[in-house]
Length: 86
Ligand code: SF4
Ligand code: SF4
Image 1 (cartoon, rainbow, N blue to C red):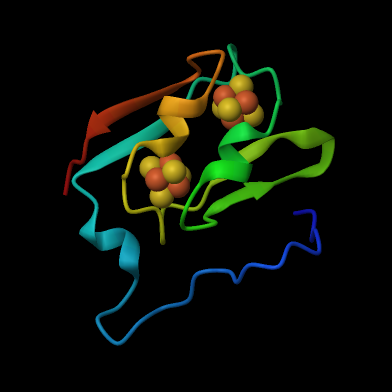
Image 2 (cartoon, rainbow, N blue to C red):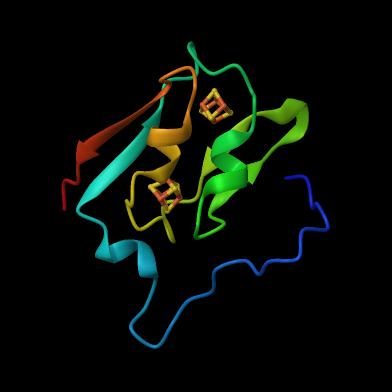
């Protein structure tokens, strides 16, 4: 994972556990459509999308709350929201 010096904190486990457990819908990246533009990484309000070598993006489901912002901003429509299966 690339450690960019962005002035925002990474999510951490809270007293109620991993915050991704609240999620009821889940974003899934279709990598065959992803253009590596990084908009999802920039706009995720939880800062739970990791930027990897080669500008690949990866969602950290331990902390993703399923807000859907990433799917809304993705210009390639590469992120699809699915009901969470618990
Ligand atoms: S659904 Fe929301 S919290 Fe989860 S990766 Fe997308 S923007 Fe971030
Ligand atoms: S916004 Fe969409 S196209 Fe851009 S990096 Fe994220 S998944 Fe890929």
